[in-house]
Image (cartoon, rainbow, N blue to C red; front, side, top):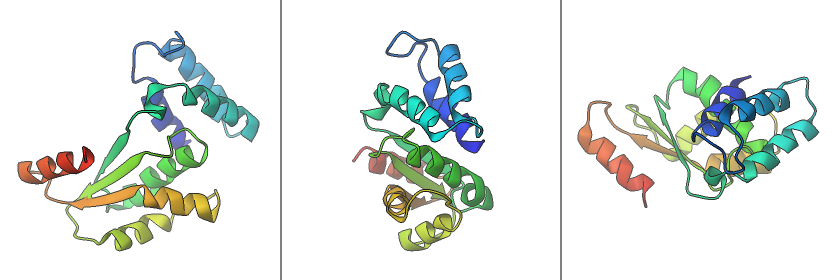
Length: 153
């Protein structure tokens, strides 16, 4: 589903995986493991494989452009949440939404939280605590420089 494309983008980040596996074979494993017909045990196998990858132990930031829009609310954040609850994103991930709309972090989290399905209340709260929001124009070099500084703090 939605999470699969994002998982593949992360898995294909390097030419070879740490264990020597090619991105193509990792993709095959991901497709087999994330299929809705597969059991949670199969997804657990994929999360164990991902746990060995560099992105799971180093700092990881995901920037969502257009974060206050409908697509982000209905598709992007639910897909990221699905990856998070299935241990395909590290628990230390920072997900930073960027949009022109002026919103408080509380308003933003309430908006995206409406469409998060599955997982426990604790997982939802943990995921939302990893979500930040930054407001600025898409043509503003100054705002993107501020965003970059905030991500490296």
